[in-house]
Picture 1 (cartoon, rainbow, N blue to C red):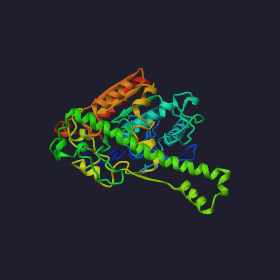
Picture 2 (picture 1 turned 135 degrees about the vertical axis):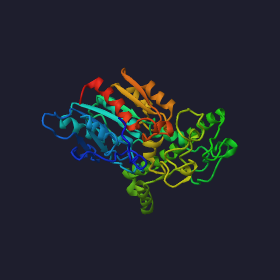
Picture 3 (picture 1 turned 60 degrees about the horizontal axis):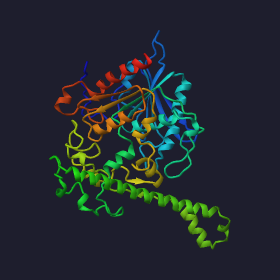
Picture 4 (picture 1 turned 90 degrees about the vertical axis):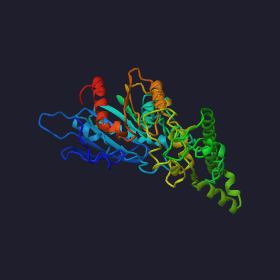
Length: 432
């Protein structure tokens, strides 16, 4: 039965608003094998005489988002499941996020759950957690000697000796294709100078009326041939940013090599000083204008039940494209390559999910402004699981709020999600 949620207008994007006080909550502090620190909360049903302890735990993590209070916790615990929401070492700050390091955090969390006695683990990847948990499972399922040993920036990262427990089921809910692939779709290709955010090539500016733009809330209309060229220009800008990042890394690596050379001690003091400073200089990339996907304003592109706009900008996304708090605004070179580069990141969901062979469920919110039907179809088609299912959550936005009058006439999308995933889980691994 649908509950009338008084909090519907003010609830947080991913968090529940209330929880039964008798639900057991254990705060867990974890140290990864590379010494990275993370933490989480393990939720278990209230202890009652005759009720067995759950043997199945649902695992949640987002690369940088707060997932210890995720909205699936109360209904899943009510159904008898344990839920572990783990926050990564990069909570609320991805400026130096190396995605490969996140796998050490997940491994630490899953080892803890196995050691605690859970027999079955369900990975629930919501939003950016979808690509992250697929990345993990795709590595965990490989023979150790076939796992990653370097990051896209060339940094050694040895997963070949890491104990990486595999999960039993994988669920993707409103999951994008990976932060890099997402960024590739929103990079503004009209940027002509990375140091001048107002320098524009008007031919590729989606906010130029000559290209079909109409100010929000009117829909825009872009020519299909122009869109093809636009996507290519986005790739070219991504490549340009990758080149900048790799040059910065190479410059620092060159200085490191020179410091280790026997000839270093024979150099003049001022030259030694310059090399030393270059070796330790931590460069940052300032990346402007990262909210420019024509699909935000043209509903004929990858049609769905979504409203116009983006979750990252109030009203017209042109605001978010230029405002200070846009995606990936300030990044270290290694973080850009590992996390936000659509050409270099190794956490690309369509690539990693091909190696995820455990039963897989893809749940698509068809009112999502930032994730589109063709992307969900790509995830599903490239899944390597023999047992895979895709379900549509109608009239639901990215945060599983109802969309429009039709959405408000249905049961709450978060309740409908639970009615989808619990039977799917129990058909495969039984009761919790």
